[in-house]
Image 1 (cartoon, rainbow, N blue to C red):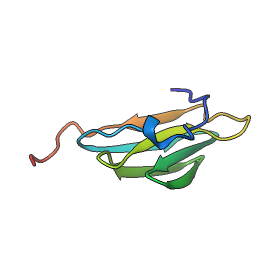
Image 2 (image 1 turned 90 degrees about the horizontal axis):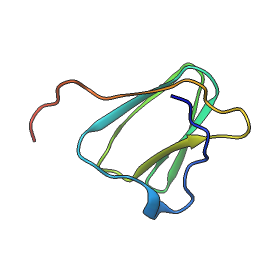
Image 3 (image 1 turned 45 degrees about the vertical axis):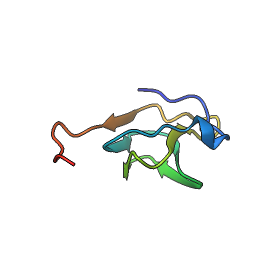
Image 4 (image 1 turned 90 degrees about the vertical axis):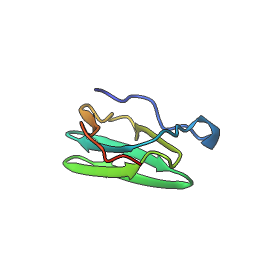
Length: 79
């Protein structure tokens, strides 16, 4: 799934929902915003985070992360 837009600069536009997310960048560089922190996720890197923390994912610069694979578990423990 290509990501072409930069991450939002307004924390009110970040998402929050129950669960966890994982993502893998197969090419390019993504920016992962978690609360007020910003992380660069580069080619061949992955990230995992709790989704109850405000979060957003966007592209960095002109070279979009062409292959970003967000993943969710098929099963999660209750609670």
